[in-house]
Length: 124
Image 1 (cartoon, rainbow, N blue to C red):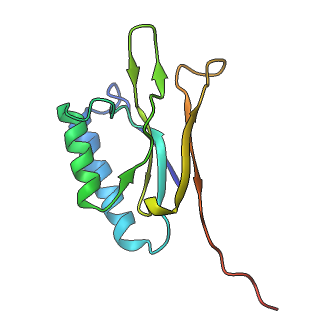
Image 2 (image 1 turned 120 degrees about the vertical axis):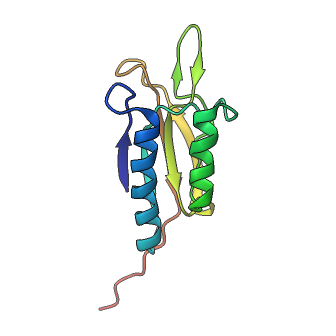
């Protein structure tokens, strides 16, 4: 499980995407269990044809990762965007995903996922 954040004011998108690619490529190739990454990545996936979203989704697809949040995570009077993602290498083990309103805490809502994770029981 990992948490990520991207801010354009900290690092330009293409520079961040290059670092993100190195990170997730290494994780996906070296980790043999479920991989779950979440965070405010500031890539609006409600507009999947936008150049930033296309590059991001192509990268995930190339590494066999899937972003599973489908609802807007930031809603204002003028716009709805899906900026907060949950990314996994085992989407079939995700049984439910939704977004909790975070109006009192943040201007972003909180996505969550229920994961079907089987763990071998300890046998004494």
